[in-house]
Image (cartoon, rainbow, N blue to C red; front, side, top):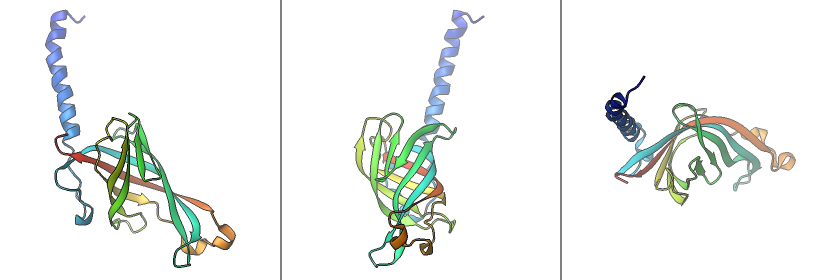
Amino acid sequence: MITRLSALRAAPLAVLVGLAALAHAQALAPPEVPEAIRTPAGEQIVLRAHASGAQIYVCAKAPDGKSQWILKAPDAELFDDKGAVIGHHSAGPAWRHKDGSEVSGKAMARSESPDADSIPWLLVSATGHAGSGVLARVTSIQRLHTLGGQPPPAATCDPARQKGKEARVPYRADYYFYAPDGT
């Protein structure tokens, strides 16, 4: 049976364990990435999420008149390091966290994935926010460690017969969300 005195002695230990866990979450080191997709100085990681879903492509004519699969939108669930669903990634591009916060952005730079069969790594700059949770102050997002997601071969797209046809290509990636340091 836990006595009141032993509970009081255990309380500081619980606080220290909680602070250590918080410090670990805040001390997530930025990943090694090519220079082109490095975040601006003075930003720190506020969230890392693992995505699993699909890149959705539409069969259409490109501006040059050639047939190709054009990206319509991503559709992916976001998971924390323990595998729990924490949000969703969709068109925009946009990310919504389960705490109600959202961030949308615009790709600013890219680097080919080390895996030639995978979509490029990206640096995205935030263009809009909603809510007051973890994504509310995000200024940069990196898409890294991609697996899959490349469009189908252009030869499989014939807009005359398949105009508007969609192809959902499975992909996985890690997303790193950054905010100004000290905020």
